[in-house]
Length: 441
Image (cartoon, rainbow, N blue to C red; front, side, top):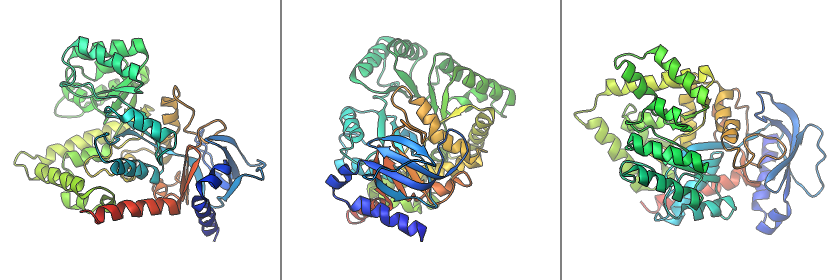
């Protein structure tokens, strides 16, 4: 009954006309179990008071203003919104509706921050629309067009590209394979001079240790780690070499974005029939799903496909992630969606399963998508915790995610920069997307 009351109140707020919602600029969640993510404790009964796009008060004895919209969260758990730290945002040449659908899918799954990792001209305008609340979207931080073996052909070009991206206002530089050592160093030197961060892949000519030494901030897909281990011993995982790599990672303060589930899809270790049965595929254009299915079947039906080698690679990656976690290295939540069978937002919940399988506990997993992300982006804003002054990005769920991260799925509601999205609003949006694609196969 309490949950029913909660949903009725939340639905009523979503049904209010825009002018009324704007008037209710103060929102109070009352009687909630609150995970502030400052530590692993849960406080109850707590009130979280929102003013505009900020949390202004959190505690067990907060006076709720009379003009505030009250949401009774009795029995529910409130925590910071989650992050997709290796996401993709559709290019400006793709349909506007598809772009808005992708951004909505992120938000509908509790993702309130996305670090876009493949920039394209025109996306800075999209970032402005998203972050101003013109469209329903997580807050976007965007890497510029990538540095790779085709886009950069000399150290001079690497330097010039870094300068252009800083001037245009991209949030970071994205590294893909193909850079020479000289080109990478020119990019890194310029980035440090200009104060713009860089992350992504580790080019083969550069290698993990040199990238760590040059200050690459994020190592997405655990890129470079297995490659480094195989230069030490290609036949078996060398624990001493792994310990050295992790110690250096911690020493320089680098971050790792695992994207474990996607790599299993890319390397063909999950049967195509299982992937094609994922229910969330109804939220993607049929042509995209068909392309994903075709790619997977080509990999698995190729005469060169070596399942044993692919499985071994995945096992090494899982071991590396478990060792990074055990050693206290800094980990950020990410899935690389939309990608092969990784539907934005929904892919996060499949990624969480792999993080658990790698040995990460629920608190560490939650940290990787909340407070850790706030720390990483501390130069941009204050968020990632349920504390006064933080951006009002919140996730409400029915059960304690510290007991089981599966409780993060199907949230009761999501707040993005102070905008409350009720379960009904999320369901209505998801139904509209599914209907759009089912009616236009």
